[in-house]
Amino acid sequence: MKILKTPAEAIEYRKSLKGTLGFVPTMGALHEGHLSLIKKAREENDFVIVSIFVNPTQFLPGEDFNKYPRRLEADFEICKRAGVDAVFTPSPENMYSEDEILVKAPKIKGYILEGFFRPGHFDGVLQVVNKLFNIIRPTRAYFGKKDAQQLYLIKQMVKNFFFDIEIIEGETIREKDGLAMSSRNIYLSEEERKRALSISKALKRAAKLSMSTKNIEKIKEEMLKILDVDKLQYIAFVDRDFNYIEKIQPNNTIILIAAYVGSTRLIDNIWI
Ligand code: AMP
Image (cartoon, rainbow, N blue to C red; front, side, top):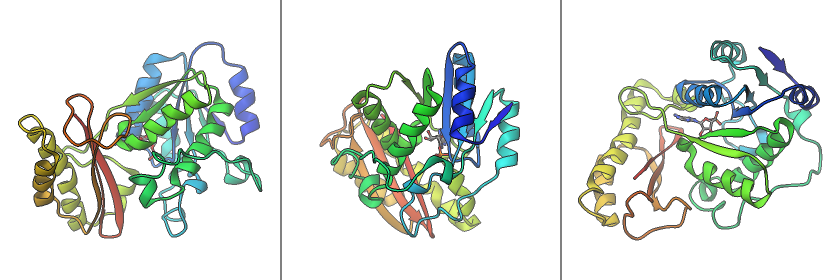
């Protein structure tokens, strides 16, 4: 497995590949969620590249950029075992210059929900994914439904900027008890871990209820009874294009939650 440390190395390597290329962008501390995307990419393409880059521009001041888990050697091992051809691990210095041309997230859908509570977050995500797409030039790129708004915005960027890249969605991978896997779960104490479970439980209950009622207020009420978090930022009901909806639309609804458990911010969602 090749380790590519600079954009120049990655561009050179990419030029040597003949055939389809699957790309899985990550921030590392790889878990089964990432692995499911890598496996899918492995099945569907001749070559697979994974990027591991904790992208500074998508963290707001005061967020966890410095303490975000970094486990490069273990991640390399996971990638090697999964049959990845190359891992791209650039440094921020190699990815960014001063006073850059900037990609802006759309004014509405980039600034509601996650974008409201983390203003500018998606500008940073789109900036780095734009760079990564130009460096790697994949046939297909793989993103998880766990970050549903990010997935939506990346699809929009591909459309708006005419990238010739197919975006493939991966299902959210969960722990046995239902907690959505996340590199940030390691921040949770044992007690917080238990209460964090209330997020996936509330979503599961909402999905079940949506089979018998389309009334969002009613469903929300039931979700609030289950949630045992320290600070709820939002419960939201949107369609697949991230328009707010007033009633459950079967096969076109995403229910999302963002909440703090202790000092850890968690997000999860369910597609119904
Ligand atoms: P991250 O390293 O958190 O930036 O995530 C990299 C990719 O993995 C993104 O496309 C995420 O949506 C995806 N991902 C993260 N957690 C999960 C999960 N539990 N199940 C499926 N995909 C995930």
